[in-house]
Length: 124
Image 1 (cartoon, rainbow, N blue to C red):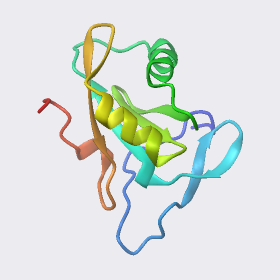
Image 2: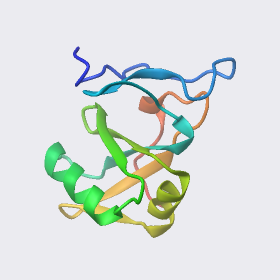
Image 3: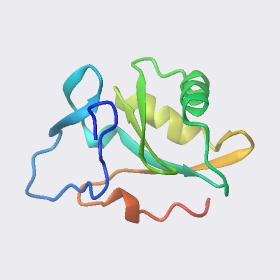
Image 4: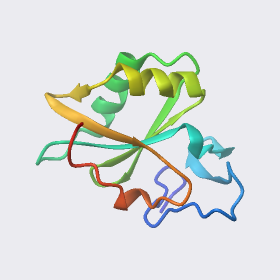
């Protein structure tokens, strides 16, 4: 595992942990990751999504003022970290979103969640 490819498997926040703890999220080094501004999502499809194309396309569609960082937490499961809560809110309210004709199902990360156990298989 490199700093460019963090191992997010088993990632979970517990109530006694501090909000916004640090872990290596990108090549630039350590930074605070505030999970209040994170969404986890997956695309409803049977084949792998081309990550780099999806990352560029979703960032262009969403056009967040303060930015978004997108990582593949595990195969087919993506973590979207927004730099400002209004950017995240705009994405939540502006959906549904698709990439390559596949619907993106997203859920806001909550304290105590294990991201791989979040049910992302249907849209309301």
